[in-house]
Each structure stands twice: as structure tokens, then as C-alpha cells.
Length: 201
Image (cartoon, rainbow, N blue to C red; front, top):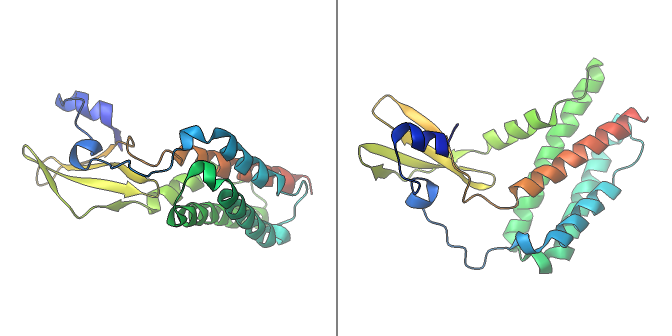
């Protein structure tokens, strides 16, 4: 994807050109994670504390299932400070479980092959890319046709059809879920600790 600022500069577009121009977001009743820092750190700490100091590959499935349970239970416990809807809790847990599952299988394959631990960022990017969906709704902007690209965290950017043959993917996450950075951090921390625990066996 091309960054939105780069795309604007290349085409002499106003600062208002972006996801919010085409599909504004209603923030009424949404969670306020910027006021829940302490609660989110409790969630991170609880998940990390649930990772054994020493781990074998055969223990992976049970450990990862337990981490998902800890993540859900702790998120539900701190939710009065975060104010997520139940469907949002379920969605966060599903994402946590999906990425952890990909990490687990990548670690099992690496262990079987005697290779190095997998790159978490590559796994995470794969999961995020596979979650992308292009909205069917088409917006007109001068001679362009524009569609919204959504991923696991909401509106991720724009698919801009400049003409019949030229299409550009533009990154604009200004209206994406504000918890995206936190979720990435938690999942990467889990992967890092699991790799260390595996090396301690």
C-alpha cells in the first residue's frame, strides 16, 4: 500500500482526502482505550504470566488454549474500564487466537526442520493481509472510483481506480480500531516469550 500522505502529495489532493471523507465514522458509544491504559497493562501482564518459563513443542496446544482463556477472562474482567461490546470482545479473542495459532504451527514446523524461530512480523502481516476485504460500495471522486479496504481492525485504506486499468492501494488507518497497536504488542510479546521458553527446554 502507498501511504495516504504520499498519495495526496503525488496527486495534489487536499488533506481531507481519505477514508473519513468517503465513510465518516460514528464514535458514539465506542470504547475509549486511551483512558484504560492501566487496565490494558493488566491484560498484558496476565497473559505473559500464564506463559511457562520452560516449554516443549508437545505442550504448545494446551498452553496456547490456556493463553486464549486467560486473555478472554482478563479482558472481560477489565472491560468496565474499556467499555467493549460483547461482539468486540469476541472479535479481539478470535484475533488473538488466530495469530497465536499461526505462531504455534510456524514454531512446530521450524522445530521439526531444525530451523530458526519464525519471524513474528511476517506471520502477523500475513494474518492481517488475509483479513482484508474490499467494500462493495463505490464512491466517485472526480474521475476516480474509490472503495474502502477493511481489515481485522476496521477501515485500513482505499482502493482507488484512477482509470480502467490503473488501481492504487492507499493506506489510511486513521479510522481503524485504536486497539490495533496494543493487540500487535500483546501478540508479539506472547510470541517472544514462547520462543524464549522453548529455547529454555
